[in-house]
Image (cartoon, rainbow, N blue to C red; front, side):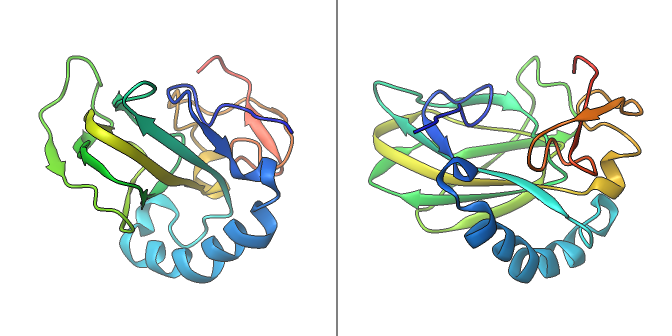
Length: 182
């Protein structure tokens, strides 16, 4: 069975499209339930027209990934759901929108409670503090708007140079990704 890394920062997890969950679970979830909420909360980020996504599950445990350093997501809006297991510590933290991730930014800390989700701007600097014990699993859905990103690549802040891609690509339409090294 294929197993790509969820992203460039997490070593343990699975891409849900590799399990065939995009069309049967994630796309209906995004279109029927999440998009009405994002339309109200994030109209400036294309919340009404989030037309693609990247979904994955990540794992944190004591002898694997403990935390996640400051970063921003390749998404207009992100859903992060704590799927649970027993763990202590490991709160999420958030800084400003498009803030430089180094040095570690001033941030607010949010407790990441099992079975609860959090919606946030993909361009908002954030991370996860180390867990102290146990194991935590998170469902992450990066939701993307081709209407927004076809104008400006969210990773390099330049007009994208589009090339062909498989599936949703990086959220550019139709099925494209930015060719810049960003």
